[in-house]
Image 1 (cartoon, rainbow, N blue to C red):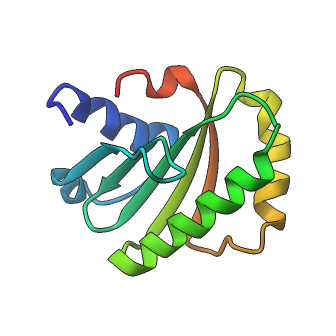
Image 2 (image 1 turned 120 degrees about the vertical axis):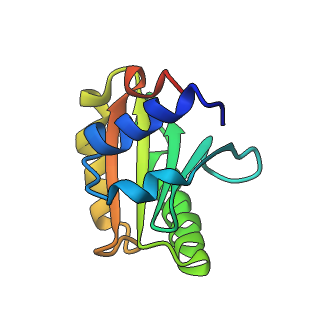
Length: 128
């Protein structure tokens, strides 16, 4: 992660995702592109928050994407001791995707009280 990306990631986590993590957790932000897993990009904040960002512009295959991301993300959250996992679908038109994504997420059987879904506009993540 570049130093220039740090304020953008912090703003995204706090303002777009609504994370109320204590300020000190932002002293340790990790960012990586994951070519082997389901997530196109991954952000970690302190030892508390794990975020997968997946580009998705239509509902084609959304069930498989969400189920796979939840399985992988929850597994990583548990293995590495994170408090929360947030799955973020990034779309050029998030309103067209949100309803279907929320239905799939709610019926997946994988999500728990420490797992959250967000559907955001690609402009929200363009700084990183």
